[in-house]
Image (cartoon, rainbow, N blue to C red; front, side, top):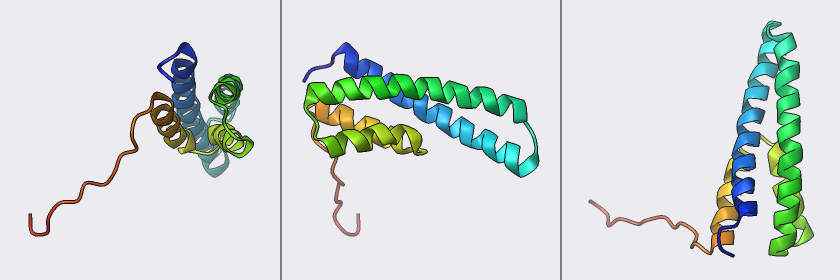
Length: 112
């Protein structure tokens, strides 16, 4: 599959959802750990929720287009709710969708 608008939307939403989730986790620590930013936490949670809805729809459509098995689809959809997982899932999905080879560890000779 070559680059399509759907893949572009997936990349943007995966990164935005992951960033919003990390910010939300920070605000949750501030709210429950230090009693600060209680009102702002609600807005950050809503932002992540709206971004996740978009991520869910675009990921589902991309999974249908690429004919992913159900397990792969579910794990990719869940990546938007696990901190840092959407970043790893995004790189893997884009690499596989564009047909790029998986990165391999470069071995250097001993003593160099």
